Image 1 (cartoon, rainbow over the protein chains, first blue to last red):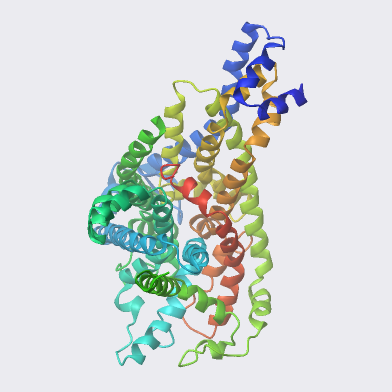
Image 2: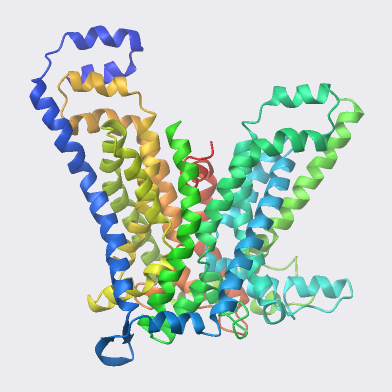
Length: 319
Length: 274
């Protein structure tokens, strides 16, 4: 049976039909029962664990968000209604943290999409060393966030010994103290450096399926490079651009390690985003209640983005 | 080639190489700094030519027990990859070959769990880990990594399984093959590429994971991502050591990543870009 099976797999579709007719067909009722129970059993571990992974933290967060619960103050937890939400929202760091989150998100997306498309177009046509360039180009994406952040913090952005300071001194300019004077911009640069290769890689992949004959036809008709880009390449890239934006939204909504290892959210709250604010409340102020209220806010924020992405991918699934 | 086509080629080559070298410069600089002495690392002007030293690598091991963190990284990423494949493969198989009306919704729901921001679950997971004594253990990290990668793994395996022609399976079923032998003799060999790619992606994601390892682990179960973060102290002569530690932490996975570019696009975009 086993050998028949593997041979079967190798046969062209036409030949297969005859071979299957020879074997005994199992009882139809048994087959139906197996095909109903077994698939569910196979699904069970994944569905159960994911359900737990989702429901348990959510339920706990909901509960914590309406009680007074501080890890440093043992004692009975009491119901305090929406006071935690009020505290989180009226925290002077709240407004800036929302603005910072959106600025970080928007800037990194803009940088990675624009530069990503530019880089992808640059390496799309063959040239000497293209393979090596592509491999080098993707590397920053595989650098762990903490290593990435410290590499930039010290060796690039240090105001005295950093490479950027040395370069500006070489040109006679005053070196910039990046992390102190432009903390949010520094975080944006660090995060964008990591995600640019990702965007670029997706655009490169997508450009390979661009219809070459169409481009050639456009060239014959006298279209210049800009016209070809605007009317052919950009529409072709619309979908991957949308995907990159959505995926970066998911991951960049809660940038954490890059802030944790560089600015620590400061100076003041200049580079604190919502994720870091929640972390501060939970593990630095030990205020579980307020942190939970903030977490629900973050979940809400993420769900807005998620709805769009789910639709986009859902459409693809039906094809 | 005639001159009009050669010139643009040279210009394009120069532009592409310049842009790429600028982009990866920080990494190249990290690589160089790892082989400098601390004094050379902060030399003004920056040194390009120097006598390389391997002292930093030994120093990193002595000062911060690199091997312990590397061991934790290996255990958690390999562990979560294997555990994830074990849970995800049956589910993906079931959805790809026993399609029902609910399959689509189920896939979408799994995807939506990935979209929950990690910070949203930080407090409960931290409290659970603390009360169950799992704080700062590789067990906790392995479980958390597995769960956060599971949706991607199911999706990837599902898309690979779906490419297996259903006629092959139907033939096997007609022959009376049990679900297990069907899995063992048809899915496993034909879906090997899918298993490899999914595992590779999961390995990369777990290795680089920083949010949970920073918050759930410290001295005992810390991964390399957490070790590197401990080098964030403000000043001092430690750039060369930081570079050496970083290089040892990222080199294996960067090389790994070079081989899994294609799978990465598929996995991270949930198959929406081909």
